[in-house]
Image (tube, rainbow, N blue to C red; front, side):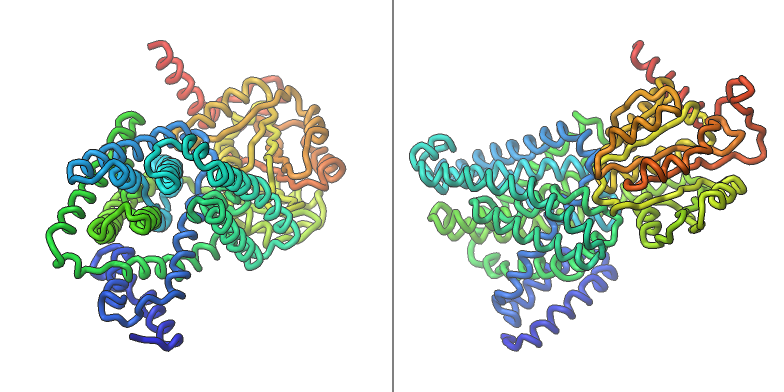
Length: 624
């Protein structure tokens, strides 16, 4: 056994370096490779690493990191749309394996208490394969959001069953347990409530205060990691698992840590290259393959456990696919994400064994189940995520446009902030400029036709609560209005800010049609603004953490208004202390565009034709 700390570090780092390279060569998921290496070098293999407490501790951080990442990367807008589906899927994903588990356990001769705890173990799962989803870039797919939301319900229900049985195995009601043991029951409920208040209510305020004063990515990374550890500790202190606390922390910091921001890049780098591999090595080190030859009892129980969990989770994913009208690949992705098991199963089986509810055979069979299910989940998730990523890439290529943006600041030089806006807004082919005054900026804008953004950052984007968008009359008829809408939607998705559109009735209908598009959902509210003269009323309604976006236009375009010439003065006078963006849609070249001041109604652009077609289809569907 290797005992020298430097030798242990060298061996672990070598494994982290070489395992992904070898797995790519032999075409197996690296998750499986790390578990196998953990088995080989662990105390039940060659015994090189023994049961290192340091590796186990760092591995636990890896599990917390996976849950934190899942919470941070949830698309708030899509999750809001899918929340009912997530709850339903979570219910299916727990209750079906739970009921099947009780039935198969009773058939094996176990008592009701053991059967109920085994059923809870089947119902829970660990998002071990989420890094695969993140690597393929399909973390915003509806199936991913539904699976993540459902996972939290299954973990919570499993922990409730565990708490009930641990406090009073003969009672199957949490309320009865609390009455029989008032001190432990009600104290535990109070601790859980305090944990939720601190993690969901206080930690976001603390992080926001910090980000406003120190915006560098290194400090931001350390803040997130500190809050994750504190959330996990509070969850353990309150009697629930630390992984649930880490997920709550991720959800609470969701809008403060944009997926494309520098802080998230550091979280992904450190987690994917250190903590998660250490966690997987730790899982492998716990597995003792000698039990495969120790007798048929352990193997028989393991086969039943694996079959029960696979059947329950697959049926839940199949029902969800049919009910939600999803694709087969999305069903496979949900199945792959929700049948892997590690932290939750280890917690339940350890407590069950220590409480003499589980036998040695169940303990060993559970460890074998972890190995098999982690392997199958890795392959299923890898296959489904790759197929969905290819489908998404094909759709993007089919809709690809030769789109470029001019990013500009006036009276200030803010290259870092412009780069951040480019990344969060997912803008292609950006060019940057900085003008000394508004007259030069307007002259540059009017001299070219590409989509342009004039940006004034008063605070970091991830601390914005609301995006207030002023949309002028006929903006929907602009040649490239859809790109401006896409910019707002992507920013809202990345930073979790609410969107409020200020516009007239006709343009509002067009925006509502865009917000309801499949896969491009945007949760927005609307305020009436008939004339551009009313744009100043927005200044009276702005809160300190709001940002205003004004959709502007060049002369001789459908939505141009002479009052646009006063916008620079208006921004400097009324909005200087807020972040703002002035957005000019790309101007179509080579075609004559009527001036609305002549009294002629502008011709419908391609964008408006798309909206009209969508409205016609919706009306036809409603009449059926």
